[in-house]
Image 1 (tube, chains in turn blue, orange, red, cyan):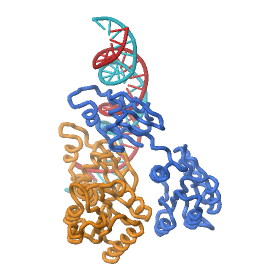
Image 2 (cartoon, protein in one colour):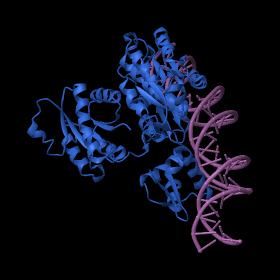
Image 3 (cartoon, chains in turn yellow, blue, red, cyan):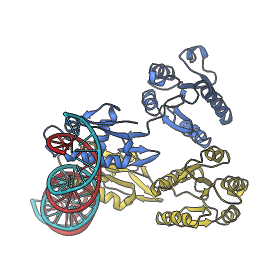
Image 4 (cartoon, protein in one colour):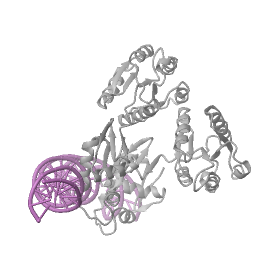
Length: 224
Length: 224
DNA sequence: TTATTTGTTAATTAAACGTTAATTCGCATC
DNA sequence: GATGCGAATTAACGTTTAATTAACAAATAA
């Protein structure tokens, strides 16, 4: 299931720009061009996250935020403010009003997306799947020597399992090839270069490409 | 600008709980799970305030506090102790060690936040905003092989990463081309003159021109 | 100015990694 | 001790990305 994001800005250009990029990232995007519309739409589509421009005619972002927060049906909805750099005061006011994050224009797509991801990750744990949340993507059952992915039990061959175990032991940490060799194969075994690649490939096939990231010239790491 | 708080506790759950709440309050939160990590992180991010669990394995809070106080760069950093109610005060000797406040678990979020606010208010007046130096505008995460700039994670190719690592290791020090060559390329590799320039250029592109300064006829240096 | 050093861009070369299929290994079974 | 079989490894080649060079522009110190 993809996350629903409600985008609120009075500038159609910005709306389109952000929308385009978020859709490309796999989000389901809804839009509104003013505060009232935003509240209505939020009640309708129950977005996981609302991206709210601070500066809007009539009902500004802060006010809209307050409005949204006053609806208990929307509790747990993340709100992030969009604002031009320099509107510093709004940061304070924004958090006060109940914002979860604060993003400055001009918008760098990558920054935006990574911030959204970080926010959404939070609710993943917090709400236990109530309305948002992808399930924790994979877990390892060491005892039964199983990998569980989307509720499904996978049996991995020994080397693949050990490799995954290692990477998974420290998500985000980049393991060099040497580290991988000495941990999975042992220091005295000499195997060719492609051996790791092939195992990585098989792992990716089974647990999903997105989880194992190559850092060229350095090594590999596991990501959720 | 939001205040930077460094949270130190060996319990991930507590770390997450407090962190979540402080972030919600608008603080920028950094974490560490032991004393050594805490000191390193403190030097890196220059927090306004450090929230330190007293009971930790290996290097306890008191010891960590002493360590921090011994770094003159961290003068003016506020330190608050976290401790379970009932722990023997005399044993703790927290204030002795240079603590600014003392907060007992179980933690009530509102209490915690108001105490932090009160403490931070003190430095606001006292140092007129010139308090704890700004953190480095970029940080290097060796483990994840990432450079973080304005909250944004950058992935650098190996040579660029190594080059930045070197310059960053001693900000302000001018590294000669020879030093750079022998450290980043090794003594036996021979590459052309422009190679460094090109890498410098790419680095500048990614982390911002202002950080890498040319000292003509001598070399390059990193500045914050 | 002029020589020297550095900056910039694009083109080239080199490394690292991905992929597939074929081969070898270890081990259980006949 | 032959055979079957999945796992592990190697081999060969393709692809991608990084590193280097080359050629020239710009800046700077003598």
